[in-house]
Image (cartoon, rainbow, N blue to C red; front, side, top):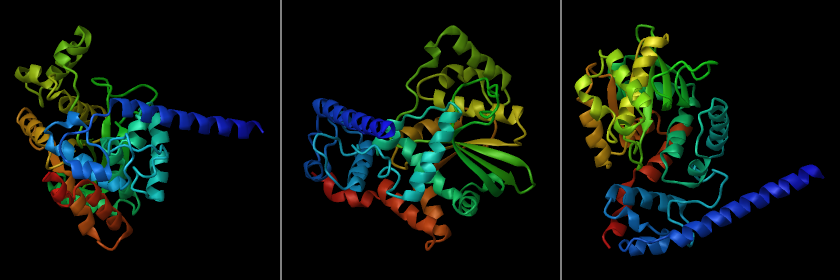
Length: 345
């Protein structure tokens, strides 16, 4: 009886929260003045997107993937909190994602569950969708894909993939001390010469990099990064300190700093940063290209487009369960051809 009452209360809370979120968004929803034929069919594009064509096109793709217009809700949002739609309407992927989320929460790597489940445009579900299925065949396709796209890493085989993780998270005392963040995706592998190494991946979709200017951070926090730049002088230039801490670069810098600390404090021989982004994201491309020129160690920072990554996975075995799923993922995130008729009005 008590269990039934608790279940009923939980359902009522979910319904109330969903209704409240819909009402809040409906009150603030201001549709874009362009793209009327799309909006009439799939839902509103916010006026705040203005002329950000990358974000507009990405939002359109998510609206088409959602495939149902919800009145008063932008085309990239869901009112169903089950996460099923955001995880490619795939039960196996959803099961793995729920398990991964519990592990992330257990190691105090909080994830915004609302964005994860309800926002089709978020990079969080994108990371789950792109990387969790690569575990299903004991990392064989993952290994083949990374060997093809990142030959400089000398990968023999990939041995683990985790989300929202940095080495040392499982220790009682945090191992990485220069920054409190973590990698969106952590990939562990063995090199051709038998050395254990890793990759920290930053996944970008439409969100900007961190909007915090660490040049204006409290003195102790700012000094911690200044000291780290000096301590890891084999990688960083002191003359770029202000740039490293700026809004444009601090997220890339802090990820790279974690990579350097992982190499020094763990048994990983190498630790590389890869930024994974859309080929249409011109702002991200500009930032990563400039940041790459601000590092000393050659090839320690690498880039990869979402399109190339998914295509490489599909090419591994077009008939496999994994490749078929990635064909659906490509259609959802990268098939801009289907937008031509909607971009003209």
